[in-house]
Amino acid sequence: MSIKQNIQNIKSSISEEVTLVAVSKTKPISDLMEAYNAGQRIFGENKIQEMSDKYEQMPKDIEWHMIGHVQRNKVKYMAEFVSLIHGVDSFKLLKEINKQAVKNDRTIDCLLQIKIAEEDSKFGMSIEDASTLLQSDEFSELKNVNIIGVMGMATFTDDMTQVENEFNYLKSSFENLKTQNSELKVISMGMSGDYQLAIQCGSTMIRVGSSIFGARNYQ
Ligand SMILES: *Cc1c(COP(=O)(O)O)cnc(C)c1O
Image (cartoon, rainbow, N blue to C red):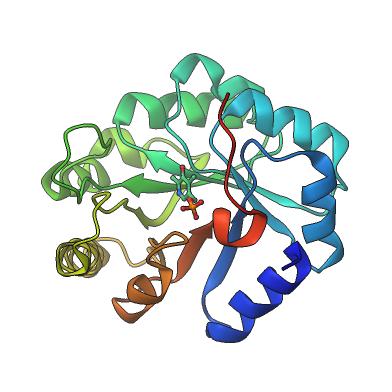
């Protein structure tokens, strides 16, 4: 099936309230343009350099989401154009994003990445640390970042009961944090293999790569 058909199929199977981020990492510009021509305007990348290169080459009405782990020394390369950073997992990183946002005279939207998987390899903050951050004075002094929600990645497993438990945990963490900060509105969870389950568990934003663009080849 074509990229266009894949996007149409996914869009027709989800509610309009759920945002579809097309994860285009490793894919060539021609594939991104096919998605663009099918009406897709939100793209997700996990490497800052690759996202900047694609930003230069693609039309300018695209929202670029950084969905990968962010190194602080690279924030400056995306600060001018990034529209949402999903993987914020420390105050230090948030401070750097704020600094680069100030330099570019803009405000950058961010999600706090919460660790929901058992795997040690996954990044993210505990719900307690996220809560402490949101209530801290240091955070209230950062005027050029907006935290608009949370992001999580479930364990890579076929055990859908475990994945469901992890998604439910993120949803309840979100509700918890929302009682402290009413600006929170986004729950970014769900990928190609589990986005339907994620939506049932309350996801408002899904990050879908291979179901749109096909399998990735990593050299
Ligand atoms: C690659 C990636 C995705 C998309 O994965 P697919 O299984 O191809 O849909 C989603 N989220 C993050 C953080 C990713 O790195």
